[in-house]
Structures are given as C-alpha cells and as structure tokens.
Length: 79
Image: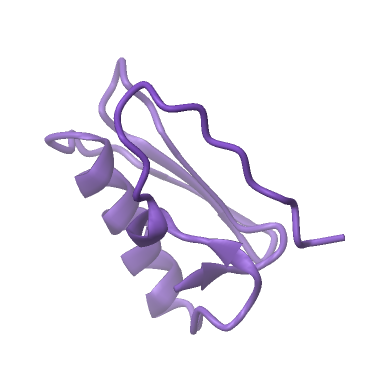
C-alpha cells in the first residue's frame, strides 16, 4: 500500500514505540514493539482504522525490498 502525502510513521529504537502523523493527527503508540517492522505495521494499522486506504503515491513498509546496508534511493512522488 502507498502512504498519503503528509503521513508519517516513525519507529523509536530506544523506546520501541511508534510516532504517527496522519491527517493532522499526532499519536504516540508506546509499544514496546518487538522490532521496526512490527512497530511500523502497528502504525499502519492505526492509520487504516482512521480511513487510510493506500491509494496515494508513497511506498509503505511492505514495499521495502532492499537488503540490510543497501542505500535506499527513491523519488519523492508527492511533488
């Protein structure tokens, strides 16, 4: 699924929590989550419950196919 413009999900490696910005709402999902993938999935589920359908242009965590250590280069399609 693709993220909406302005949608942000950040995993905090120290607290193992997730910060979510979605449609001008800000939420802290304290966790702790087992790892980044689980935390990001929780953030995406939170946004889904608020009406996110994934039809916008940014890639989601499920589109991450690069190997650990690879440089991630992506065009910003929100412009």
